[in-house]
Length: 119
Image (cartoon, rainbow, N blue to C red; front, side):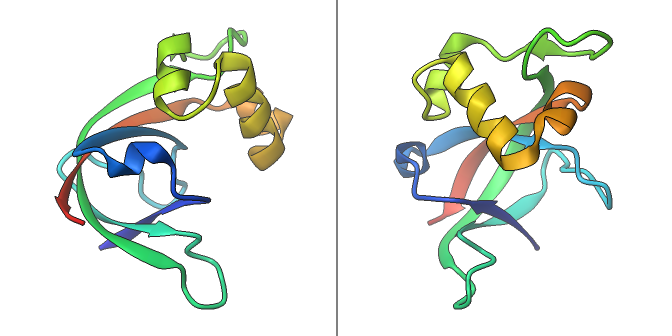
């Protein structure tokens, strides 16, 4: 079972179902029906805090902003707020800080909808 890591305990993780935005994985992308282990700070020395197991219920393509040539719908203000940000600009700034402008402007994101199996 693969790990789906989070940098902090976002309030959305307290809900029975939640969404998150992830870049496609280069080894094997996320798949609908896949079970993942949700971990806070998985790369920390202690291995992070394991919260439980969730199932990926759906996957939709999104783009961070209207960059030329990227398919998928643009992330909406409602999606950014649901994800824990104040608006789209805040979310895009966080993505650029975490992943760099090049990646944010040239790669699509997966909007993953998950539900807790146990956790």
